[in-house]
Amino acid sequence: MAVIAFSGASGGPGATTTALAALLTWPLRDGRRVVLAECDPDGGSIAAGYLESRVMGDMGLHHLQVADRRGHLERDFWPQLINLSEPGAEDRVLLPGLIDPAQAAGLHQTWPRLGAFFAERLQHPEPHRPAYDVLIDLGRSGATGAANALARSADITAVVVRRTLRSTHAAKPRVQALRAMLEMHGREATRLGLIVIDEGPYSARDIAEKLELPVFAELPFDPKAAQVLTHGGDGGRGFGKSQLLRAAAVMSDKLQGLAVQEQQRLHAPALRPLTALDRLRGGTR
Image (cartoon, rainbow, N blue to C red):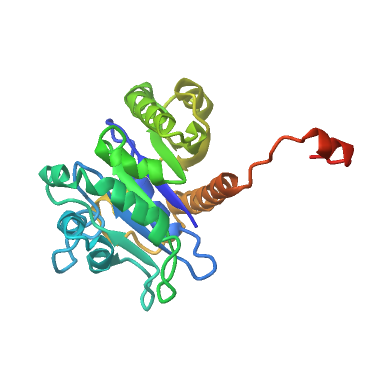
């Protein structure tokens, strides 16, 4: 039961690559499934990159703005998905992103409803549908515009950053925007954290201190495996056991656990203060 948003910044931090690696390595417990929604307002890249435009048919996020206006968001969501599972399975699916960034203007009213759909309907579906964990790729622009409503509905949001001054500088306004948005809507800023790509002269601790966020996970700088995720290709027999995917599996397990902890924290019953009568009865906390 998890909704995780990934945000990036300029300078090639790798938010989409990280989100796709998470999709491919996500732990599927108790019969659950996982969907990656490419919600970058600047447009999607997975269909043309990792999938090398092999998918037939017109599917993706751009269809949902019309569906939402007609009140058919949930009904029309399912036909837009691409199956990225192992043969014979349908447990890892992709909602491809926008074809043209100009399409993002039409989604202004849809972003919050889509976020609610991810957090509520996919997490607690009708009896005949399986439950899904949701990974949301906000890309570089989704943290600072209307699409940040998706981060508000997420259990946690991970900002992807490299261990360089340039990457940290680019991430700072995104972090500030996300923190301000969460606080404005009464949400805890502790829902924010970093995924640090191990490229650059600074330590993950240095980056965490600069951005005042905890490190959720670290990923290795693995250009060969990342090339497959960004541009497609076979990757060879060793791709599944590459440094990147092995570390991504650890990251995915950690993120899922953090999301569950956040949900448990939010739904824990509030403790009322002990009254004088409670104390006379020997009540304790």
